[in-house]
Image (cartoon, rainbow, N blue to C red; front, side, top):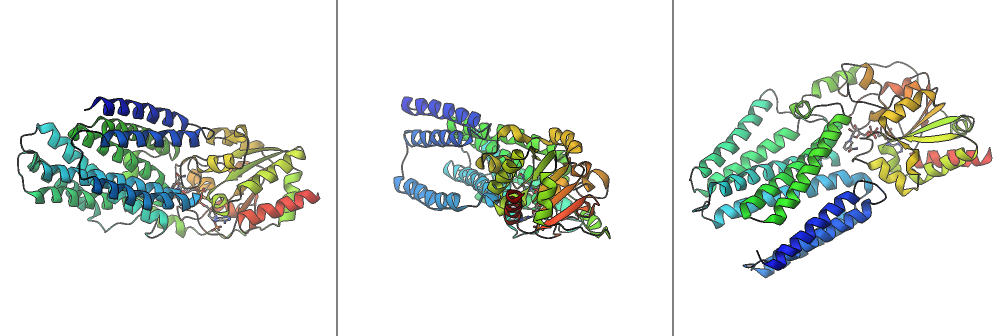
Length: 460
Ligand code: NAP
């Protein structure tokens, strides 16, 4: 490696680490993102300075095409569609690694004369990259609503076929490592791994999607690191390991937040219970309320806990919510925000929205703090949240989300839920909170409802 490239790589790695440090808090996240992006730019330029670079028109074409697709997509994407975008970008990374592994096989005439570790690392990268690409596409389809978010299987043979696909992929890879040079074997590796990726993600239900996305993200990082090993490229190894390690930590945190082990998520099969939970009848009446009644209830409370969810993000109600909280504070009401780790559609979704509306960070309470606070609250104001406040996660062993830690809003003295209808949340299941005698429903788009409450509060 040239000295210039080596120095460039060291600068890039330092920027990656600084960028990651910035991403640990909402105040420094944007700066962290820019620093990491600058690191990636330095890594790309350093790579292009490596001896033996050629086919410049192809490289420029790739850069132009990537920028032409990526920049407008990232600029236009709505905050609520960010998880799909992350899934897609992550998948493309895995797909690129798989294609590089294939190209490397062709370039070296089947790893001819190369040490065994090159073939092992390259084929490992091909398998994981292909799994990540196709698995991410399925996750994208589920989040985008193009595929059902409920668990989907091809019947009793689903699990055996999934295992056969993985075994076939490994088998083809072993044949190549043993010296076989047919290009079709690598095609077999990629196609079988693709089947495995699709069949692995299809049976995973909506509520578990955050864990799957971060797991696939970690897998892409791992495949890039393996490819770096095969190509003897330090930048790929370090960047891949950073993505792999941070993705693994996030997967672990998300699985803990859902109270699920990764094995039980990957084992899937929540479909049957989802149907049975849907079938549970609930004949209790629904009490609806008006903005003026809700405003009076809130204004005369001592403590209000706001519980934001995906609906607040869809309605972009965060600024109105902040205004409402300011008015309530002006009337001597103590207001805090209960933030569930998987509320919304991406990790930290609520934190980002509330930070954007200048909600003081100290007012945000995590799951445990909130559950300690809720029994003393006079009103729990649920704004577009559903699954994260579903009491069946605590009380109904037949529920698909049973065991997932939720915000215990029913422990507060009263609950007001803002949503448009009695419709289900992402997990697609009923919510007995809406018919609880302590709950009143304020139907409508969250932003208009909160704005109406703000108007009423100003008149009180
Ligand atoms: P949720 O369970 O998806 O429910 C959101 C609710 O918002 C819906 O029931 C919907 O009811 C309401 N809503 C939608 N648009 C609205 C609007 N304009 N105004 C008012 N209400 C509106 O949301 P959640 O409680 O935040 O739970 C998140 C779910 O997503 C969990 O199941 C989680 O596992 C999953 N998930 C999370 C992530 C992550 O990383 N955070 C990623 C992927 C999936 P109406 O239609 O009746 O209005």
